[in-house]
Image (cartoon, rainbow, N blue to C red; front, side, top):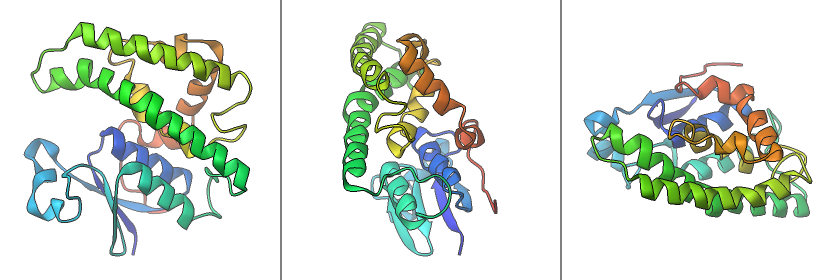
Length: 217
């Protein structure tokens, strides 16, 4: 049975999971969830995702939610196809986990809030707070100073091979320009080179404008 990805076409976390499915060349059926109609809060949906959030996968009856967990599961299940994305040696894996923690602790909480302030709030008819946004961008800029140092020594965050930790940045990082900031390409040459490289990956270009089912490779 083909894996099913339940989510919204353009949601950040749905595209994160879909990017990795494409990287690993895993066929999947996309099951769209209409969040404007509150389908993600329906009894049928929360039975599988108790927080009423997207996405979740149904892999022949195995239900899993949280996009980063989904990505790790896909990598573990399909180690011999597509891009590796997680090192298997003990030190390489430790460096990957370090990089994944960097994204989760020092990037996502700040970038996602900045995007929410200037992009998602207006879509919901709410007023943006420019002062809050400016403070978030200033904080993110200081975090990217460290990225600039790291990426001056190696191609990616965990070394010279791309990993999940790098790809995890794509959904919110690409939306930062929609929020009015060019920080990902103006911060410094190393960050710009790294982020432009990620944005050019085939997997991201397949899903960036909206996730669709992929029946075969």
